[in-house]
Image (cartoon, rainbow, N blue to C red; front, top):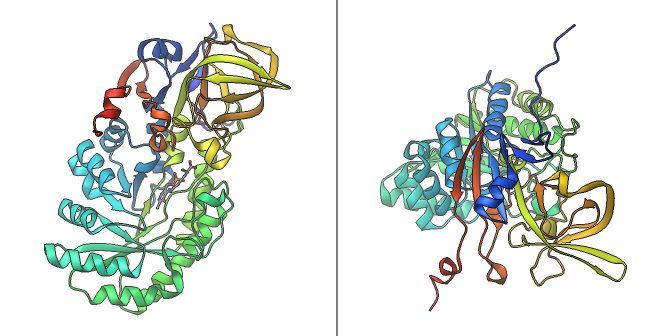
Length: 433
Ligand code: LLP
């Protein structure tokens, strides 16, 4: 019998025979008791596995994986990724500082994206010696040339081009079209490269694209790279040699898969993605840069919350938890779906599903995690876990309603590290008179 190829579990969370939900080998209940709730828990081993999966599929190409820091910028996580040799994709001076503190040497593996870089941020990145600036407009290129000349530090640049490829995703996170604020029209790119090539302080070395996030089909990635390939060939005719192509991030996950279901096969997703990119790149002698965020970290995380109340208003039933939209805004902002499961099966009756809204304590009707969801019969005091919250969750959290931000723990097998202590009201008040 042929051996079944090894698949990577979609999520590092499973129930033990006692009905306790584990993160790697550690019961989430233990973590909630020790660190309180709301609590973000991440599995380090899962993140490493995902990184390895990417590496394996691109091993025939000269490549560098630049983790998109914005997805989850916790320092312990960045340090772990840096140790694994990952590069980073940053979008602010703040993220640059995080990378530098995680590992000074990782700065040389860092690309700087973003449509609104300031002169101050450019100076920081030039001095730090980052790998590449992903330049998003002609004005930005002018400013970068000025800063580089002033500091007498040559800036390696890639232009982020808009490939005019539409990728099916939420409109707030789709970026590959002319009408979006990102990138430079691919039709104008040749001219802009010629301008950059003339400048003593600019070294045009790369082309980058990023067509959007949470994209569930591989084809648009291949289509975008095929457009880039045509541009790289034109630039070669102009005497500009492109050394790296950055395919951006964007590979999505299945937020609706039930816990333990085999429907989402991460290995298969990466195989298809890699095949589309490889096909799009055919014949190009360049280094491939990748900027995955969500795919590496989203499924490695959960948000653990405690149920405060269960109440009925008219025909509707509500589960009110101690986590709110300030902790996890994705449902409110994108109508995003997150699976919600009990942390102790023993306290929940799976056979007794009730249709409920799962909401937080914030004074907004938009403060919900699920609407009209069939939930197991959980009661006040029980713990629940919101799945797939390792990306764009803690990193977009806020202090709205003067709520202190959650703590974060990084679990690695049996080991647990408090990666961010819970904020206090004193932390919040420190900057105010
Ligand atoms: N590179 C660039 C230039 C980006 O703008 C992004 C994400 C990434 C890479 C990483 O994309 P990923 O692999 O994570 O899809 N808050 C939204 C997602 C915003 C994505 C912003 N850019 C959400 O929660 O779905």
